[in-house]
Amino acid sequence: MNAITTAGARRAQGASGPGSPARGFASRLSAFARLAKFEFVLDYYLSVLVVVSALAAGSGLAGNDLLTLGLFLLGEIGVVSAVMAFDDVNGYQDGSDAANYLSEDGTELRPLQRKPLLTGALRLRQAQWFGYLSLAWGALFWSSSAAAAEHQPVWALVVTGLVLVSSWQYSWGLKLSYRGLGELLIAGCPMVIVIAPYGFVAGDLPALLLVEGVLFGLWQILVSAYSNTKDIEGDAAVGRSTVAVRASERGNRRFIGLLSAADVLLAGTAAVVGWAPWWFVLAMLPLTALRVRQYVSFVRNGDALLARRRGVVAFRTGVACLILVNLIH
Image (cartoon, rainbow, N blue to C red; front, side, top):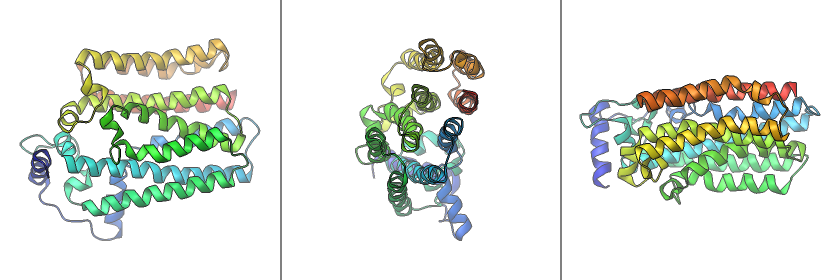
């Protein structure tokens, strides 16, 4: 255990006591749900609503289509849970979670209950096994979804396989976020969970669905980028190579500004070139207003966590806009 980890563990114990493992089914279930960040990753699962709205407004949905989408959703829950579990395991081991959640005097910087390893509700081996079993669960149900699907386009199989292999290595295995690839994973994986299930059901990929997939991934980045900004000190200490760590304060703000501008411009570009209906940009105006507010307020007050919360609101608003577009179009 390195110095950062040791100091982090001491700070965690100072804030919450040594802690004891969760006992009883309900307590353990709650602890594993916190490990999987179930409360905070529900937005990932909104991808299914985007896909269902697009399919229902098109040729409709048959029983086999619902089976394919249901199996894909179950697999998605497993894969996302594995990513979150391994991220917590790594954050606990290298001390970055303690650094980002606790001050030097043990004061909580964020709700410590989000980290069951820091509180002692779960042991390290329990969290590791949960991650491996969740990944196996995801592989099983994604394979079942592809097998049950009416269509198996090669591109959908390939991108689904890439997410299955790479997503959990964000902080574990190859530790891709330590190699400067974290932002690519955060944007690419959510995009795939929109376009891949649509491909399995419909067999093709309309331009509008591709645009929606890109937006879905971009919106995740515009939550994560603010989290990374808040976590610069802890991430830098353990070698996690985020844009926020590598860039200057001004450079990081410009990066987030470019992402915010891309979000707004993509809707207009899609409407102009015919990838989306001409009124697409009008339908996305509520999101545009929220995105401008999010970035402008961050530039003014520098409150990354407030900007992150506003990013979550913007994300959910954007999903509602996409569903509306699909149902009307």
